Structure formats: structure tokens, C-alpha cells
Image 1: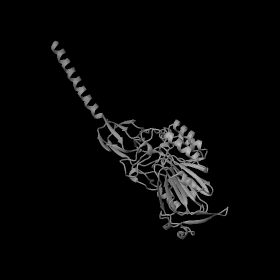
Image 2: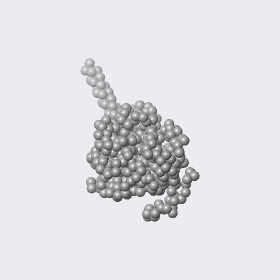
Image 3: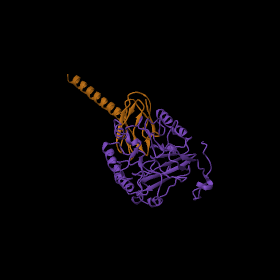
Image 4: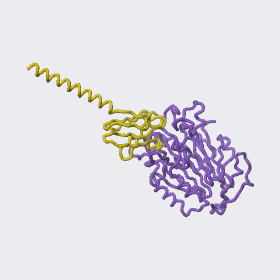
Length: 110
Length: 320
């Protein structure tokens, strides 16, 4: 009896640890930042895994937007405002600032 | 080219600006009054001071251009954009010769907040002049994109374009800040260009034309988006006219050029200066020493002088 309970206990512990490790692993891959600085997206090209949330933060003294035609569109981001989007499907997402369209970037989702 | 084109070099003083080498493109009789309207396609003057500008009493039509007031802007480049707009309006109110009206070439507000529009209106109305607005990209940032249209969109077409006549001059307000394409510049769009073509159709080619829009219609610096993708098409419709003046804002500094019969001019902002093209990593607000700021902000006064060969655009800094 005791050995069975122990075995189950160990199994539960291992499963818990495994799931914790897995969870932490995915959490780390799930979030990444793009900085908007000096009228540029930094990095302008970014490759992420499916399920990743990308957060853009505007560090300029001028508002910017993050717009990918038909995919996502932020409101105007004032200084230090952020916008996040979670990529649930693979593909190349090109985006730009609809106020300053020379500002462009790409998120490659694999 | 019109039949009236001829060279006026012999009649023009050499003022050292190279103007005597430029052709006067059109001389015309102003039908209806018999007054000889003579407008030169030369480089507009850019005097510095209110005093100098007012020394010569203007005759004919005088109007003002104000631009990029960015009400709501409070960053280091100018923590008090409302204050400098108030100063600009006070200067306008203090002009001894009252202009006929004012045009505002956009970016009235910084973030399109209702309170920003309210403050702008409260201050600008103190000049007690009619104001003809066109929007900047900063005026269309509210969620429903309605604040600008509710205030200034009445009687306009599409995103807010329109035309009107004043003292024999045809004014056209264009919108080049909507539906911008990734990687591109300012944009007028097919619908607006079609309207412009119709608006100009059948109009006498001797009618002086003033076009105003927020982003420069000519390519100033594409690396910073300072130009209009389909601006050349608009200019194509205008090239047959003898006198065309294009007034823009957006770049927060005075810049001008002459191309054929078209004079291009950009006005200063009343809020904050921006760097000269390529002189900084980005076109963002330029922080200068506090005592230099007012020398880089200001308004423009445009005068069509009767009986003079030159159209005068006088840029007036808030100080300096």
C-alpha cells in the first residue's frame, strides 16, 4: 500500500514539475517587445512562434499606430503607450504606422 | 502654357535674390473690375519680421496661414503648445492691417481629444477671423474619427476637401492624411483627384489658385514621409493655370521652391520645430534652447498685391 501511494505521489510530483517546466518554457516564448523609437520599429523584422504575444511600445514624443491591413490595428499610441497582439496563425505579417507610413515592420510567425 | 506668357525681366528690380532671372509667367486683366492683377511666378519673399512686413501697406487680398498648433502637446520640445498658440493669435490680433481670413493647414490638435479641439477653437477664435481648415493626421486620431468632421467638416466633400473663392482667387483645401499606404507618403486618393479635376474644369486659366493641404504636395524628403504619393497628379491638373500657390504644413519649418508657375511653401508650426531633412535621426520634435524656440515657431501672411508682380509670403516668427 505504502509503496503504491509513494509511487503515485512521485508520479504526481514529476508530472507537476514537468508541466511547470513546460508552462514556464512556453511563457518565455510567448511574449516579446517591439520598441517604437525615432520613427522606426525596433526590431523591424521579428520571427516568433505561433501563440506569441508581441507588444509594441511607443517611446517617441509623437503618437504612432501599429496597423496590419485586415489583421490588427492599434489606436493611436501616445508616448509610452503600448499595444499587444497575439499571433495565433503562422505567416508573414507586414505592418506600418498609419500616421507615418514610411515606418514599416514585419512579424514572421512560424 | 497660356498665351499670356512673356518675360518681365526688364521690369523687375534685381534684389539680389536671383528673381530677375525668373520669368513672370502670367499677366492678366481681372475681369469684372478692370483692375490689372499682375502675379509673378517668382520666389515668394520671406522677410523675417512683423515690422518689416508691415512697413509696406499691403493692397489686395491678404490672408494668414497658421499650422500645426498641436494643442495638447506638452513634451520637452515645447511643454506649453497652448501658450505659443495664444502668442501667435495675439500677434495676429495685433496686426494693424486685418487680414481677410485665415487658413489652418492641419494638426490643430495633438491627439484629437475633444478638449484639445475645444481649446484650439477657443484660442483661434480670438483672432476674430474666418478660418478655413484642412485636417492633419493628428486630427483624425479619435476612435470614431468624428471630432474634426463635426467641427470643420460641414459643407466639405469626402474626408474634408472643398474649394471657395475670395477676391478673385480660387482656394482649394485638400486632405492628404487619410488612407495612407504602407511604405508610402501622403495620399489624396482617386475620389479626391477626380473632384479636383472637376473643380478646375472650365475655370479661367488666369484665375490665381491657392491650394492648401497638410502634408507637402511636393516631395520634400520621402525618407521621412514628407511628400504626397499622388501629389504630382494634382499638380498636373493645375499646371495650365498661370498662378498656383501651394501652402502646406506638417514639416514644422519654412521651406519653399518654385517649379514653373507653381510656388510651394510650407509654414512654421506654432507648437514645436522639427529638424531640417536628414539632419537628425528622425523627424520628431526638435528640442532647442528655450530662448531659441519662439524664433522657430510662427505664422505666414500671404498677400496678393494689386499692381505688383510678385506674390508675397511673409513668414513671421513669434520672436526674432
